[in-house]
Image 1 (cartoon, helix red, strand yellow):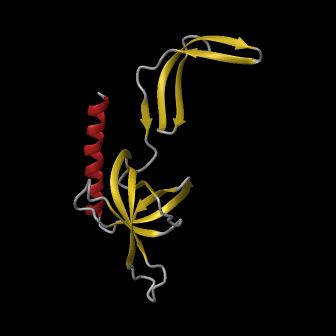
Image 2 (image 1 turned 30 degrees about the vertical axis):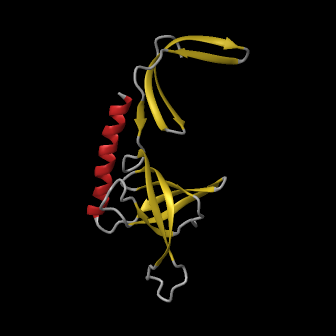
Length: 169
């Protein structure tokens, strides 16, 4: 890459996948390694790979776990309600943290009525579960049967996006 070359750069960190365009300003060598100097990017663009846009949140919620052994496999009887914190959310799912263990592929109801009053029993399935110290981090997907329920989440995500843009300036 020679000075003046336009470079398209993508990187991933714990906040997501980002990209930017910049110009190469120079090159230096340190032993067998060649380093490329670039111009500081003017803007970073977040690459959204999901079907729905995801926003960071801090929603206090409740996870409602079902009895696992019931005569009828289609019967869902909630038996335990656990406090949780929803860390991020999109129209397709999200991530929450709780102090109780949730099994991978376990179905549960999620109460997010603190932020979305109409959403006190969102059907979910755990798709990735990770234990971090005394807490469980659960990535989940929504199992909505009606798109009108999903639209409640999408409206919240739009509102939250506006809030975040206003705080960041």
